[in-house]
Amino acid sequence: MSTKSIQPPLVELGLFARTFVAFAAALIAFSAVACVSIFSMLAYWSITGKMVDFSIAYRVTGLAAGVLMLVVGIAWVIWAGVYRMTHPSQAEN
Image 1 (cartoon, one colour):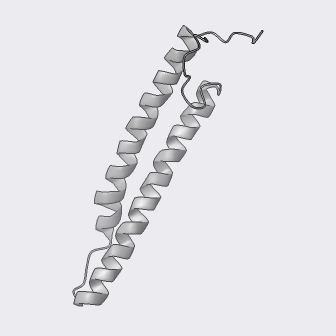
Image 2 (cartoon, helix red, strand yellow):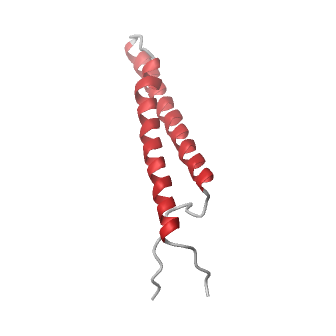
Image 3 (cartoon, helix red, strand yellow):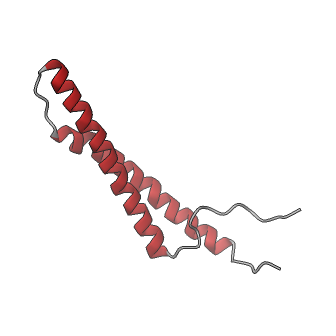
């Protein structure tokens, strides 16, 4: 029976690469949520005929999702860094 622990995803990447992945994930989350919000507002506008403020899609929904994903991503970077320090790589025999 193996006593290997399950390592976090992409833990073998360096600090710069992990940080880049965290920021890229935050940008993707911001863009995806803002896009869905804009399409939802367009649907609302076409159904009701009431004008909507499209900046809400960026300021409220997109920004919240981006910041939340950035916090999760930075926590992952720290967790993966601690994991790398506490579990040095061992060669397979």
